[in-house]
Length: 620
Image 1: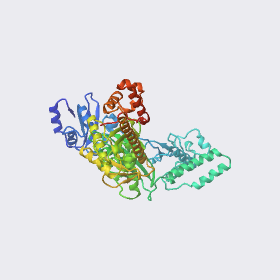
Image 2 (image 1 turned 90 degrees about the vertical axis):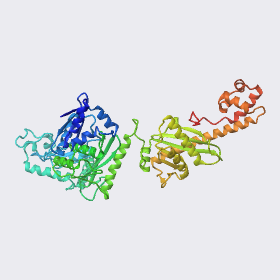
Image 3 (image 1 turned 120 degrees about the vertical axis):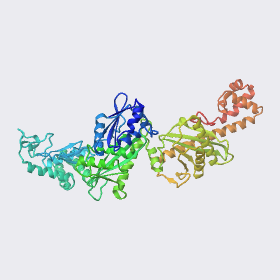
Image 4 (image 1 turned 45 degrees about the horizontal axis):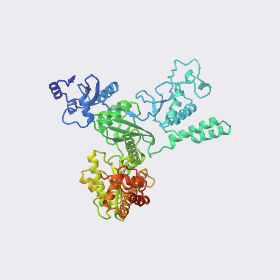
């Protein structure tokens, strides 16, 4: 049944008469293309929500704007709606539906127990209900091949691609049978019952219920080496390493031989990232990262349900999946997954113990991946920026950091510098210098407040980006002074003072934070603080030199304030006047030859220090 948007009256009437039953709805654009497929246990409430009230996000608004026609299909149950939605999404691949971006497809081992002569092979997808046994996923594909070679040779199992039939034996035996590495199932040299015992032994080994004798394998490796069969010994060595990696040296080993999938979730307004950790037999085998754009108006729990449906269609499903928050709709998803794998599937979380730590690790991994995806450019987010956000618990990624430093000489010539880092790297073109104008004497907090106020005023006036993190040189009083100015302007940004000696971050309120000396976060901040300190000191020295030069000129016979003004008007600064010849001084400033020579001699020893990176000494 269709709903045409061209007729507002008909659209309103049909939205009002939508059935409050489970079903699937298909949204089409003006060209008839399906742009979104959704499901709901109540079509009436879900479809009407798109057209009622304000849009919750730009993507939902764009979707509704593109919709020219809506169809819906009523189903008997919510599970049927779930399955139908999944099939329609795979068939039409609508623009606004969530599409998985999988980091990597780890291989599985399949023992084809559903065949008379079971084979052992590597596969990429799990096919449920085929009667075969699956193990994995295996993150180390090279090591997996060594394990398969060892098992197939030791148990003399077939590794061919085609199923073997007892009633149609091959005319010739395969090469592996001639080498003694196969029982000859291909030519019917062994009965299915005897051959199956070897296949079941492979299942026991892969499941971890029967351990392999690694010491015997090491002895064989030494025998091969002693017989100068080095290539075979090296191959045996690689096989032993692969077995140790899979069966013994896992990153995490739990006290119980449990099978779990742990889903760590991270979300942003436009996407969701999931890190799935695979625990098999109590060991962490590896993980997968899934990235997907957010569907219009969908909550993270609904997105998780959609992701899980598509993920587990081709991956092994454990009896228990740990995730926080739980997916929605939960009961239909459990029924769908149970129908795929043939056993019940429960969802939950872990509140304590090693499984809780592993689940937290999965969440941390997902957040790290999401942070790397937030970069505005093609480059990845710097490690120090990621480390800063994590260690300080910042509300946003500190892609833009600004640092303020004050410099003066016993209270004279107070100046300030503001330096900027973007993605952890100095942005010298955005450095700024300030003459402190409204503070008398030595008062660093008041100077910090003045610079913060002037900086904010200019950023607002020019609609420039604000800092994600503000660092001030000093302690808690300096940090509080800057925070007060931000609060007065209605700006909420994290602020920390960074003292030079202790290298401790001091917030306006709360406990100080001491970063490890080896942390990338501290390296970013110290580099920026030192840059601000250098820049401020250079500017202060230059300012002091100008003041001294002015005083020296005014003490010359025949030079008064009017003559000084002529020189500044002609050259712009005393620095440039000091670089001129006496003849240029006389000509451009209107001085007589004697006075020009006197001024030139006075300026020469006091030419200012080399120019700083800023082209604008910022009288903001």
